[in-house]
Image (cartoon, rainbow, N blue to C red):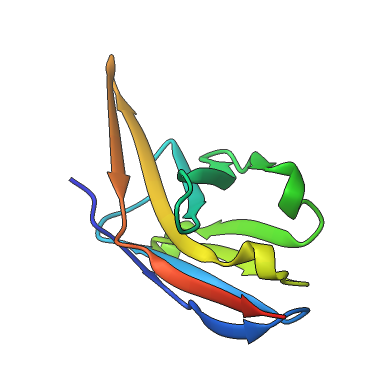
Length: 119
């Protein structure tokens, strides 16, 4: 079991920046992939960015060049640096950990943190 706690959300004006953090309750060294997802009101939860254990990253097109995902295995923490924020980035942001053990896939979610971008 892995518990994830997000922090760093808040209210920011368009063009501003925020850095989200996702702290895990255990070492993330063995976690295959960590990711950030977001869910706007009335919409489904969508992928924002992922980072694999080897460091490979993946971003949804709408955030490429503006958001950066990174992980600090020593601190068991994953970050999402968000720059040039737009009102359409407003959503609850969730952290997800994916772990593969043998043939079993385990997924863990945090409780989410609200990001609101005003125009």
